[in-house]
Amino acid sequence: GAGVSQSPRYKVTKRGQDVALRCDPISGHVSLYWYRQALGQGPEFLTYFNYEAQQDKSGLPNDRFSAERPEGSISTLTIQRTEQRDSAMYRCASSLVGGETQYFGPGTRLLVL
Amino acid sequence: GENVEQHPSTLSVQEGDSAVIKCTYSDSASNYFPWYKQELGKRPQLIIDIRSNVGEKKDQRIAVTLNKTAKHFSLHITETQPEDSAVYFCAASSPRGAGSYQLTFGKGTKLSVIP
Image (tube, rainbow over all chains, first blue to last red; front, side):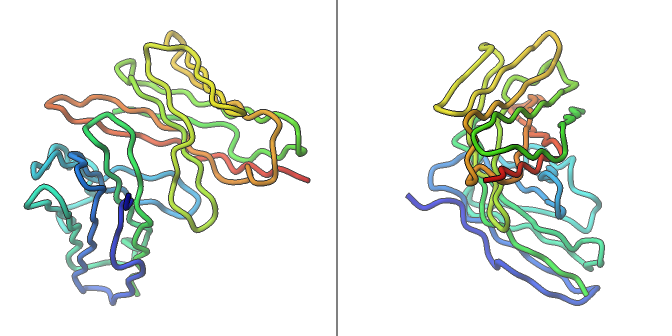
């Protein structure tokens, strides 16, 4: 079946602009996770949903970052007033339920100029 | 919160030799430990995982061991092949209440298998 998909795959934006990153999880997966991965590092947890409920947002760096999953399927990670330090690979993962195997998407590489 | 340390950061082995990567974790409540392989430009792919109720798991050339008392777990790859070259990440999953689970990753090990 189809795996986790993300769009766009690449995003170049100017400092100060808002960006919205989309994640489409594996069909039927209850849990959805957002991570940020710097080059040469492991994924760093940002936030986590069960269905449409945001269970944990402790990893969001500041209030410019927000995420939603209104219908319990597709999720959007929004970064407002982007800064150069926001440049990174943003990855989404989903699992059947919380605590189970997480399957990663291809990521969105964000570059803030 | 959970802290995962991974060693070594780089590892070079001759084709056919074994490779061992070690990780330690800090949260005794962590109960799920996956290993991911990430090739250059690709997404992390799960290669093996282990839960806290077992001490060892094997899948062909790959095995993982877990020592809960010492809070460390290891990945063993035998008969390495050039296609095993990649970055490997360990991770630990700790329950955070209200059905929430957080996966904390190590910093990765770049494995190079020399033909």
